[in-house]
Length: 220
Image (tube, rainbow, N blue to C red; front, top):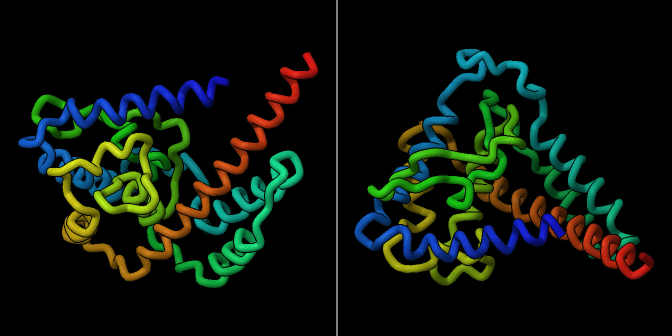
């Protein structure tokens, strides 16, 4: 129930973002949104005293293991499986990029976890409880999935606040991030797809949780 309530509130908040960020400030919102992420990913954990925030090896590999285990554990209770899930797991493991220098990754970076000032710029980033050390491009891929644009088949953040006119398109954000960080983004599609797969695993786990709660309520 708590998860469902939180999701509904988050969706309402994102819909209100359309009104809270007036058209004349939406370019600044996009610039600030991606600049904040780029600035985070430029900081070495050691310089911040955060070298022990998480493991240093194979961030994507560990994520794939964790979320695939979540998928398989949910199959029976959720009463759902899809062979493509297992094929995706094999693909992502086979094509996994070599990890570069680790950085602090937020893990859930999107407008839903930012506070936007009156000037349209990001004033604060919140909800750091799943932040860790990892691959910054995985963080970027997740953020891009949350930044929906007009015509997207899959809407990332609840309510699709950035699908209205005036917000930057994803390619602009990608180019700006590349310029700010100098990182090679040739494998970015992998990270975007990986995050779609991860989100699917989370949704199946949530379905499992809801099914379990419903059955418990009926028994009680």
